[in-house]
Length: 455
Image (cartoon, rainbow, N blue to C red; front, side, top):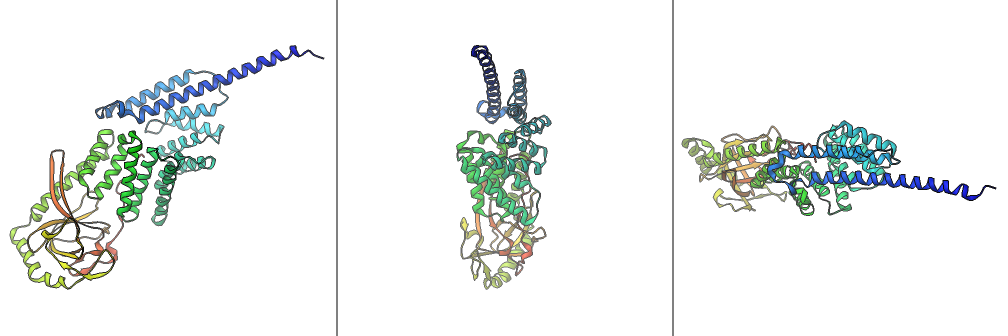
């Protein structure tokens, strides 16, 4: 019989070599993961170590850092028993930049083929397809990752994808509602994750437009954005957060906050074209609106006097007897009051009557804005939401606004100032125009006029 010492030393040496190889590969994987994590920290916390004035350098600095990391990863030679992990980390490093990288797709595709249960690789590959514009493939990746393991990254990414899947009417609405639910689940898994809160805010933003601009949904979106900034300082430097939140501020007629948000988004990412464009469009709109209200549509005195006289001598008697639609859904008689007597907020039990002296829309077509002058010569803006494309009023039309919601604006931005009062109308259905109630065809839910490129 062979003696034990003839075989045991060789077997022990083989075990030690195998263990040493395992330790070497584990060290390589640990080092690669450390490099990639540091790369993402550099990206996500860039403005904690740089000023906003350095925003134009961020992408160049990030690309340079990415290339250095990839060189260090390449310098670690040797074959790996866990090649899928190393391919995933290489793909993740390539995926740190905003643009699509074919090399990232190649590395991550190989990783999931070698290890189909590698959830992080599926999530990274889904993000690559998102950047590539292949929404269907991105959805497959995130859904596949969730089939292996419930995780916040797949949930919030699936939330993004659901809002981008091409669908019409009720199907799109269902996708948006499902998007909100996925984002909620992601937040529930980690309430201190700022990215998940941000994605939830974006989901509520889409829901806000799908549901006819419900103020409660608007507040839910704003609260989610605020929570993102609260739990994650890096969220404050996210230009898309400021851009998307400013969209809500604009529709809520918080114009000062909207302008500040557009300006902040533009400063954080000078390569984005949309924030400075929308800032300038809003400044132009407010400038025109403020001037038109102050100058009463720039109509000649004779025309203005004729309009005011018509209200006082004719329309007031007719409209005092009208039963108006109210927020409660009932039709009731209301007390007619002059514009100057309105209080900020909703004036319950009141109706105002006037003549149209101008109309105005901005590039987004919502709201439809017109100037209203009453018998006393007071003038303010009326902003109507959820309008059909064909709806509008003309100069000289008589308009009654039941239970008007008044807001007084005083805005200063970039050396410009605007002061005017406005009445917000959520639907044209509540208005009486030239003695007629508006038909259901005058109303249509607003559609968001832009689509964020990244989240």
